[in-house]
Image (cartoon, rainbow, N blue to C red; front, side):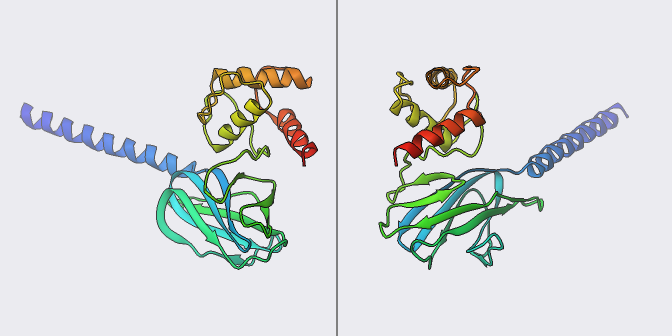
Amino acid sequence: MKKNIAKAGIGVLAILVVVLSGIRSARAEESLTILNTAIQFVSESAVVIRWDTSAPSTSEVEYGLTTAYGKTTGRDTVRTAVHTMPLGGLIVGVPYHFRVKSESVAGALVVSRDYTLTTKADASSGTISSSPAQLGASGTSRVSKVFIRDLAVGMRGDDVIDLQRFLIEQKQYPEALVTGYFGTLTRAAVARFQQAQGIMPAVGYFGPLTRARVAALDGTKE
């Protein structure tokens, strides 16, 4: 009798573990987010859109001449956390709107903000408005200096790499460690940059005022 009760107790515990695991998995699916959207210019009429998601999900890019889009790459139903979708047949010098979409196995759909890209005759370059990080033709990252989210200690991503490279250019990051992780050294470098630019409080939080200043500095060099 006691053995049967013990077995029953173990069975109930196993069921609870499975249920709790399912709840955690469902919560992760519900909080699906898009991260690190980037563009690789591969020719005067083609680009590759890349992005990450917080959980494995489908891949799709909608694009067109307006925010109504009208064209799509079609949905890649292979679920992954690292997404790559090519766009072809683009007209040189014409701005295209695009956004990325991903859907988790649980049916949670997430859609990015609208971006605008314009290809140039130089196949390795182009312009982006409301820009994600920009990639060179070789696939290696170069400093975009246009950031679409605030950054703080503990965060990771290609935009952190861009920020670290920018701070090195500005001679505010003597350690020059390009890691993609926003740690205490990066925070100190941001604080030095803020102090030099008169941005207060200079506490190392990379927020809207600092992002706007970086964008303005980048504009003066063009």
